[in-house]
Image (cartoon, rainbow over all chains, first blue to last red; front, top):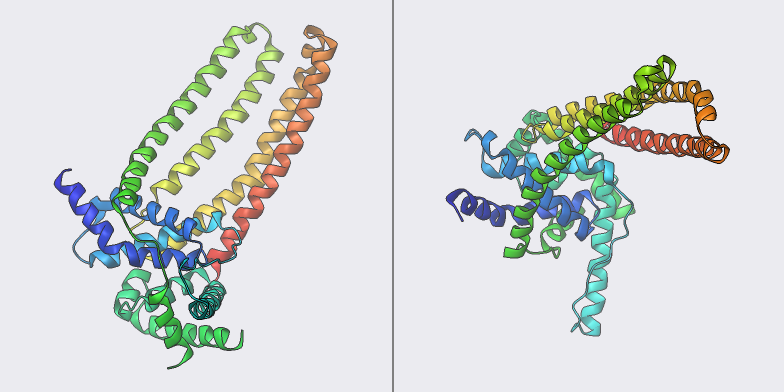
Length: 164
Length: 185
């Protein structure tokens, strides 16, 4: 394995979780489709390595590729019912809590799915804990516009989760 | 803790598939596969052109002007559609993935608008040219082919036309939906 391959592998392992969660958000929690999307994201990361300039953080750059890949994936979108996997050695009490969690996850994805493609990207990065300035850089919007939007989306999401 | 904080906490706690050596190998395999597929697509396109031109000369189409015109128009319609599809896919693949989301979205919207234009205007026009050319060739077919084969050609062409129409309809609907999703603020 050459140096570039090693660096790419490190990039893959460091950013995998964030990219996976972002993709899950775009496919309503469908793990198989999210895995495919993640693979596609990293193929595009590899193909775009030559375009990376140090004027932005690597993770910001990868977020751009990830959101753009998910936007391209919109044309393949199919409806999906979320099924969470439970561990086989769970007790009845655990099962109750797992069931509650499952309902919460379903609700969360259902509500995220009601957002437009752009708002989805913004809130998924906010959920990941990205700074608003960084979100603005990924989106190509100004900081104030992002702040206002995030506030609006948060209210919309909270209402959706609370009132259904 | 408000509803959004709850969502945020759940977000980070959700079980996700973990990266592994095997999943990384999958990415590397896919990178090679993409390059291979591109080469295959180019090969298929080139062979289509070669086969069509060879067929044209094989049946000595040049010796009969009406046959040459009819077959030429059919081949041209087919070739134009294949080339449009090829370049369209290439445009999509060549979109820079590192653009900021708003710029990327604007380009994607432009791409889908062009696609809808192709499906709504160019493709029906090419089908018309193809069908007209086919219709002008029918007397020659009737003369040189057996009755059974002649009937088979007519029926299969009609079936193909219906299937093609349905395919275009589904494709337009799918791409219009994507366009609508992308255009929502």
